[in-house]
Length: 422
Ligand code: HGY
Ligand code: MN
Ligand code: MN
Ligand code: MN
Image 1: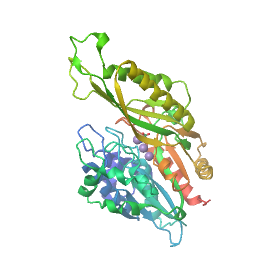
Image 2: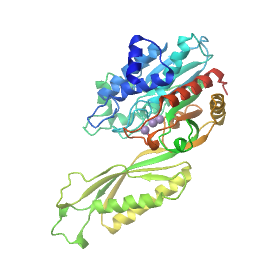
Image 3: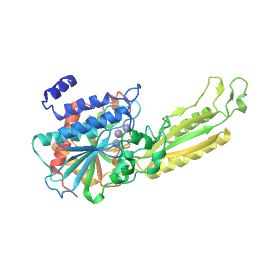
Image 4: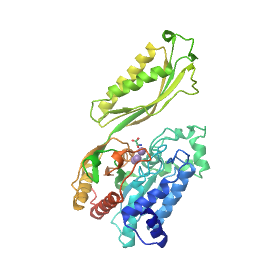
């Protein structure tokens, strides 16, 4: 079907929006900046290739399109009323390492397909519509999340320019190498008064819609998260001669910490805790690990529930390391409060969902999204599309169907046609 679509594209016939979204996703999903598979890290070759391609698709859809100083791809479908305000939509086009094809991308490609549908019919909207492909949300390369959306809301931390990636390349050098003028990043900030709201369409990245046999859902709020990088320093020594009672084993301390995180975050609704990265740098089979690095990602829908869990985990880490005579260094790399979606926007999404013949279903987002950054500029709402394969995401097995993409596109189209500003 996708191959046929590509043929359609070549023949310039216009496939249905859902199939178009799937085909576009496949095209950019195949670009990866490392052999591990689907990885599109900030400002790598695959990332720049994706940005240029999306500019093209936006222009073909009747939009103006450009790439801003931080790498956001900004498309606008202008209203005929020059002094109209702007509704913003979009999502991120960077991915996690070996991620999926639709995470972020759906929220950019779907609005482009909807605008192309409007443009083909010569239909304009009473407001400007801005589609932003945010340059970075996952934090893979520089351990800093929401770089693109924070620039748009005026919260970009310029000190991050000095941060280096795993190869020692600073963000500033990466921006310059990609042809960006980082001094223009502060000028990206939008004026709150110009915007009517922000809508993000995104795959659910979980199993809830699949289990309820629902194609779409409306997000109530986005769980807040706290991330740390933890460095444990014990003492490397001989695996054969060091008695078990005399060890300062950094990896054994890490093992206790991982189980502490799992135990503390179990059994409390919406609270989750993950150690996603765990390394013994330069480790050898016959050396007791002197250093062990691990990451913490603690999330909850309620900020006080998350903060209490973080406090318990940090004091637990201290106790474990004191007992094991292991030093700890903690670096807080992200702290994002839970972001509530605006009821007045949710209701209009619910009405569009109903008109599409689907019972509106509200759910929490355990995953973070650019909308939690945009909440600092304007009211936000999110439409989730069902995730296949058991809801798996951040994995090449991530999938959705063309039918669900088509339905989600029709709901956004209908939402736009009926949109009533607050
Ligand atoms: O980690 C997250 O929740 C998002 O995918 N960045
Ligand atoms: Mn993601
Ligand atoms: Mn995402
Ligand atoms: Mn997002």
